[in-house]
Structures are given as structure tokens and as C-alpha cells.
Image 1 (cartoon, rainbow, N blue to C red):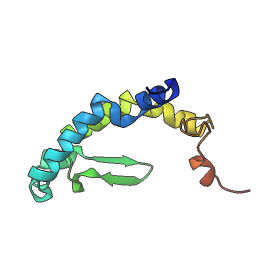
Image 2 (spheres, helix red, strand yellow; image 1 turned 120 degrees about the horizontal axis):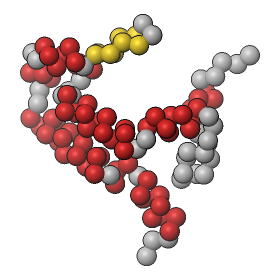
Image 3 (cartoon, rainbow, N blue to C red; image 1 turned 180 degrees about the horizontal axis):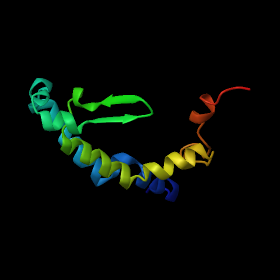
Image 4 (cartoon, rainbow, N blue to C red; image 1 turned 90 degrees about the horizontal axis):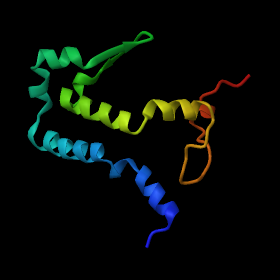
Amino acid sequence: QQSQQQQQQQQKLVSTTPEWKKLVQHASYIQNDTHLRSLLLDTDRCDALFAQHDGIYFDYSRQRVTLETMDLLYDLAERQDLKGKIDAMVNGEKINFTEGRAVLHTALRTPTP
């Protein structure tokens, strides 16, 4: 039998969520049945798969993804409370549940005085 801590950790694993499983199934379809060349012919898709922020242009249309792929990714991010976890990371909260400590990703990018 699993300990309570192991059960809690497993419940938090992204790979145990229904959203992840849908994404895995979708990825299998995309990898086996979809060619990037075909996707690039869809101008509506290409127009929808770009973003711009702070003068940086992100062109996701050059990836083998569809609008459904993006919807599934958004669902997964929402299910996992990605925004809340990013805020917790920036605030130095203990979000590394396997080691019970804060992560240091932001500290690595903080300019030194």
C-alpha cells in the first residue's frame, strides 16, 4: 500500500490528469497523421498561432500543432493552475513538492548588483 505522502504526490503529477491523457492521445494523432507542410497551407491556423509580447514575435505555426492542440494545452495549464504556480515560484514559495523547497529558476536570472 502507498503511503499518504506518495498518494498526495501522485495526485499532483501532471501525467495523472485527464487533460494530460487527452493531450497524449492528440499528440499521437498529430505525430502519425499530420505533416507540417499541410498545416502551413491553412492560413487561418497560421494567423491564429502567433503572439507578440514586448517586441518579441512568437510564431507557433511553425510547429506541428493545431488549434485543438493549443486548446488542450490551455486546458492542462488551467487544470494545473500554471499562473498560480508561476506566481508562487516568483514569490519564492516551496513549490518543489518532491524536495519540499522553493525552486531557484528566478534566482538564476536575477541581475547581480
